[in-house]
Amino acid sequence: MLAAAYVAYDVLAPRHSKMRDFNPDEVARLETAMWRSYYDRKQVALYSQMTELLRSQYNLPLVRSNFVAYEAARAAFVFKDGHNRTDYEKALPNLVSFYTSIRKVSDIPFDIDRAARLELEWWIIHRERKTHKPGDLDRALAELAAELYRVPVDQAMEHARLRAEAMTIRDNKAENGGVTEKDWAKIDELLHESWRSLKQAVQS
Image (tube, rainbow, N blue to C red; front, side, top):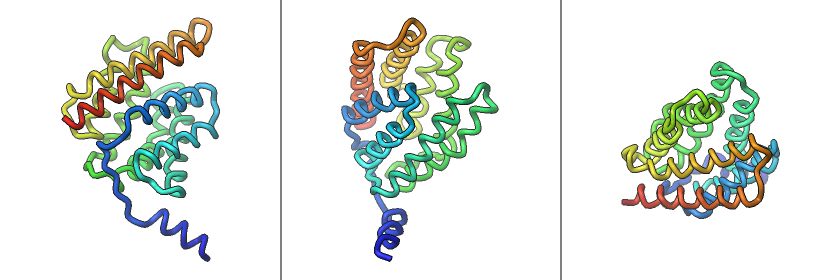
């Protein structure tokens, strides 16, 4: 009964997160780790890293962070196994559930459905990057950040450009023999710059 009560409290008790108070270096470290887990198909590791991100940056308690991380990881792997937009959109329910949970604790009134669709859209542009013109991925990433933090899109463009550059390095290296530890170090460096840029943008 005590365990059930704890779980109920963890899942249902009100929580509050100041979205703009994230630690950019910690987000970058965890994003690098999650990218590696995702591309290596290490679902358990990805799930664990996501729960850590949710607890440390979104103030989610232990049990709830596991439920929310499941939705994020599930969306990622549903998308990964897709082959066209119809397949990719099967990840939307999980993304909506994920952003619903974030919105419940967020101090920023972002639009849940729009955030989920913007998340999926940059995933699709990234997957189909060879059919998109330069700058499309940057713009899609900036639009998501702008929605989540309610800032003008232009304010999030440097964050998006650096994040897209990190993705491009990973993609190009993977297509040409594999991603080395030196490559991952460069990716990690760019992600740190990216999230520091966003931190400055949302607090300006």
